[in-house]
Image (cartoon, rainbow, N blue to C red; front, top):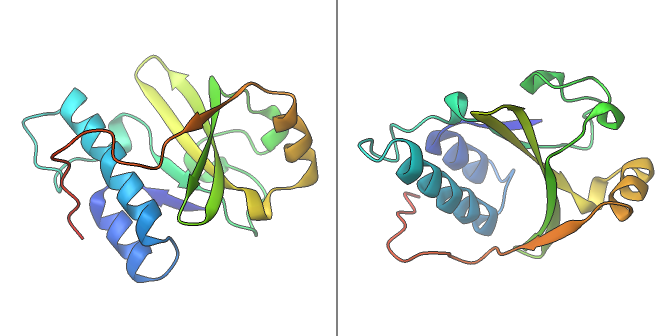
Length: 143
């Protein structure tokens, strides 16, 4: 699983070709929104998601989510909500998992590698569409 806590993580994954430019821009917008809500005094480069909940991107070889402190089995996870994001020609399902009142992990599940059992589970859930476009003007994309 790729774990994103800072903008440096986003740049590293983008430069390695692990995420698209469009997905990197999506993460930059989300991180900027969170920074503005929780730590407006910080520069985006200084902001760290570790306190608020990380972004995780599931890889084909991942068997569980223990790397971000979640249960081993995807079947044991009950997200607060699920959204669908189409960005850069790819589709991701995003599970928002609330660990406590101040911490929400966002786990990105690429549709292309999703296990059938999880696909079946998602078909039974209310899924909201999430925009991959800029939501506000003036968002800094430092890459």
